[in-house]
Length: 398
Image (cartoon, rainbow, N blue to C red; front, side, top):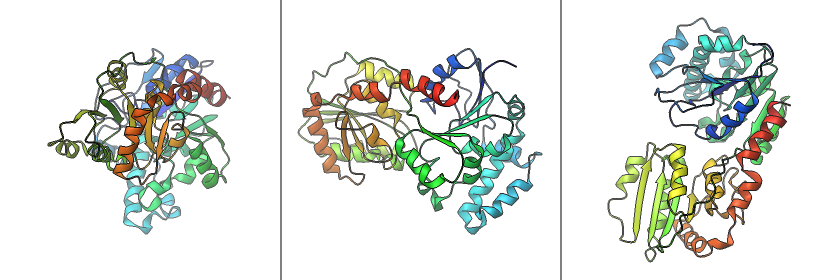
């Protein structure tokens, strides 16, 4: 509608299911700035939908299954020659992996382009702001959005660093960077990487930290002498969750309770490793839970140390949540993690740390946790109440 400030927001699955929980922090601020927000998710296998501000209009996912994707992507009237041409120019035929990845991506793009809701949104006025939450997936159709003045893309980790991908291949990389107006990176490291690798393209580049809400500090105190450790991530190889357990087994003289939040392909295997634990160690695996339940854990349970031993990261929102509750952090020095884990908020580990090194740091941080002041850093750099209004005023509205 003329005169209305409208945002077209492309996501992976949000607000369906439990993924992309960090958008829950951002959408509240976006809804205050725009008269109407149209949200178009790429996929979701569930009908479950999170509550949203009243001015958000959510469209059904483009596809809900791989079968639906293939059918819609093949049997449609979306451009075909464009994708054949890019197959040649990207030399995607040079390896079986690249070829299969390219074909799957092309089918996904054609599926999106044929979607009636996408077509409707793409016909809207040039005044609408287009915001892609990821630099892959939905962002691949950026070259087909010609009538929007503001085309903004956020970049995180796997959607930015090609070296994290098999054959260092991300399809349509050139086309995405040629088509956007503004690229927003969640870490300074990501911004510098983009300047070095994509500086030949004409776009404005920004670092804009994500943020978490202020839930205060838990009044639950640790008075039982137990070291309460929390970790939060998917249980997948890159997160190396089993290394936490391996390290805890090297601390036999301290009572420890470890809670891990998150599910994933390795969840059952991790459960199997808990069959015979020493008497001093208690482990609780919650599986996948909502962000509200994560916050509830901080509010209603003692937490002494937050641990993240991932082999690769962007800049973890899970650490933002931990330091907002004034919890010191032990984390691997990967990605932009060193922008949030400092001498004030915790301890950085070498990415190739040993189990004994982590065990030693857990004991040290626990014994000296009063020396850390994590919440100060959160208030300065990762407070959603500061970061998202700044992002909106300086980037979305500029």
